[in-house]
Amino acid sequence: MTHPESTQPEELRTPDAELVEALQELVQHGERDLTLAAVIDMFPADLAQILMRLPEETGQQLFHWLSDEQAGDVLAELKDAFRGDLLEDAPRERLTAMLDELDTDDAADVIADLPEALGQEILPTLKEHEEVEELLQYDEESAGGIMGAEYVAVPQNMTVSEATEEVRRNAETVEVVYALFVLDEDEKLAGVVSLRRLLLSPADTPITEIMKKDVISVPTNLDQEEVALIMEKYNLVSLPVVDPENRLAGRITIDDIVDVIRDEAEEDMMKMSGVRSFEEPTDSVLHIVAGRLPWLLAGLIGAGLAALVIGLFHHVLEKAILLAAFIPIVMATAGNAGIQSSAIAVQGLATGDVWSTDISKRLGKELMVALLNGVVAACVLGVSIILLSQIYDLTRPVELASTAALSLVLVIVLATCVGASTPLLLERLKIDPAIATGPFITTSNDIMGILIFFLLADWIYL
Image (cartoon, rainbow, N blue to C red; front, side):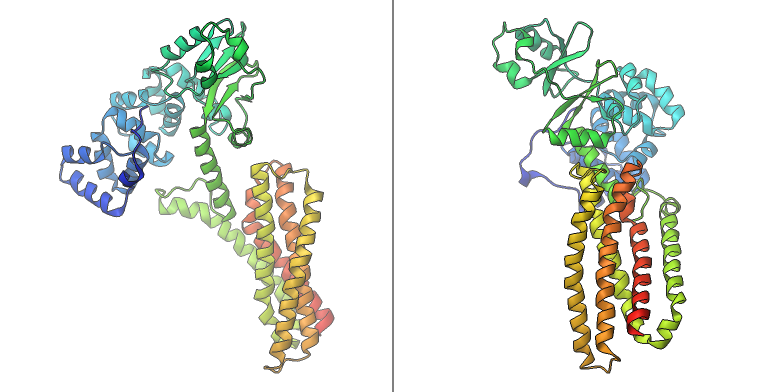
């Protein structure tokens, strides 16, 4: 797969509405040569963005005009759902030619997005069909699913000059070489040599003398998020992937991990917002509704339970309707406190800074934070009520201020503890903790906050 030459920042033109409109007009008027001249030097990622913004027929026509090499580069940058739709009616020979331009991991991703029958038809026609077929056996979110089969491996009895020659022989298939992997007589991973170390060592030096033996590697079944954490922790740009017998299966490069980090972050953000994690901008209205509606209904049920709690204390409201004014304050505070603490816990779990076994330690720290926040917020609210009592005719302002302030402290403490502990408990249960920061935490804290407020109001104010 080829990439554009380095370009100065001032020469870059990122896609905008004006450019998309101009290309759309060229394509619709059949101006093939002018269109190709306009996109020939574009980065694949920019051209992919344009294709997804063009009308469907126009985008398909532009993609059809691209060379096999440029089309292959663009394929690797397209969103999964859009890519599958774009290729479904493509001629089989052209589809094969485009996939042959891709690295094996990208080719496997494209095959996986095609209808199963079409994928099975295309797979045997690829030059590297055996490698692609092997990659397809792995879970797409595992180390095996994101690794590539392009790497340079040498036996441990080679010298530096022989290993250098091996790099040259693989120059066509392995475009970027970060390191050489050294294999023992049983084809197991024995060491790794950086390209810099290889080039700076004397030609007759045995490769075993310059290789690093304590190699960091990952198994094929390791989750991609764990792989990303390992590469980030140890500042790696290339990571070998091994099978259960420690035989080299492939390598993961830093560009693959950037995609993983982005995808995982997008997935967590969607889950936090109560949106299905695989929603795409190109999805139909009904598909998007099907992903969002269950969360909205869950929130509706939770809000109904909160309303039920308020109804149970109707006698309190009948005696002091003024208390109704504090309901949104309590609900908003409980939700915000819970979201804050759960978001920090989820982020810590994602980066590895917080472990699922840290519940007691985490709760202790969050409890102190909640107490300080609660006391400050309660003082502000209490003083505000006392001051307002000088303007408005409030009944028993001291008792009202005490009720509101104490409720605020307890709500913040409880919501913070629930928000901090829930993600850790979910992690221990092997459930994605990101769902904890969605409607679940907000709704549960709303209900508990309202309950605490009315219990205290019934006890102190009435």
